[in-house]
Image 1 (cartoon, rainbow, N blue to C red):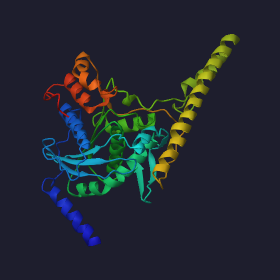
Image 2 (tube, one colour):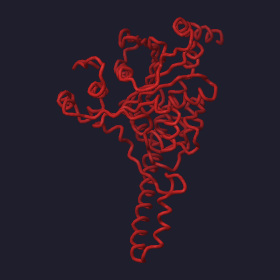
Image 3 (cartoon, helix red, strand yellow):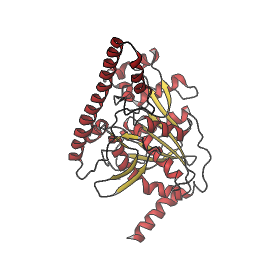
Image 4 (cartoon, rainbow, N blue to C red):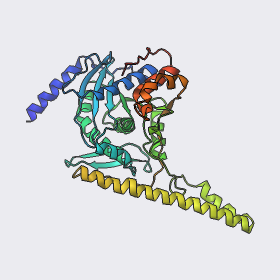
Length: 378
């Protein structure tokens, strides 16, 4: 058995060694419109589920290598190799499968470092941030656990073959998983598992994925050069999930809002009474809202998912529902030309703004040098 695995690994890897003898210096920091457009294009490959499809000539300069099975909460990922030996990891977004939809709505938060236990009994020890206060969306974290576990053998082989440049991309839920995947790779590089990796992220239409401390940690690691959050201003998905900031939980200490309460004591009696009453109502309202949020979009939704995935152990949760999205914002503002161009697509439903094609169109409205987008283009 060990001999068979060895030779399988050898032959899988040998195809890469021809083009990856030394680390590639070509992956550069900074937002690249052409690179972003290519990443948006690769997301369309998930629409083609033909078994064994090698996607020949799908995108010039990019070679398809691997597609995972549907795993976890109906997650999947593709592996491509760009002509300059950059590895491209593409994560699939939400599907019509109830598990995938419920993953979006499992909106409790869990620690950004810990261990996930999969139904097979396998475990994944992960670090997505150094800050102990960092927390991330539980549903996306569980999906990431399945994907990362599937990625490890491939990344091991690629690294052994000399690959050091990685782009992580995805749309919608896949965009959210980008942040976890790139943060995970960043800390694996930092702790010496994969030294000298260069990791770049293009997350398009991503929902919010973690608390403020995760966003701080992630953005600090990426130095405003290596991770981009691409958003169509008419798309509702990047506004999700809705968020509640608790005064006592979700702010650094010393908390200026809580300290304000002490200053009320110097006011005349009636003003002090009115202001303290109003402040306490807002404070308690936020706490009550967050608890309800965690109860229904945390505990209840988690039970539904566990019934669908027997043996799944959900990670522990953190008392917060204050969601933020990290990454350098690439804001694509809708204009009149956009509305005119997508009149036909708008007839298909109100969520057409979420279509990657609309992102590719808007990219051309604000960045020069891209080829013209045709009506029948993906």
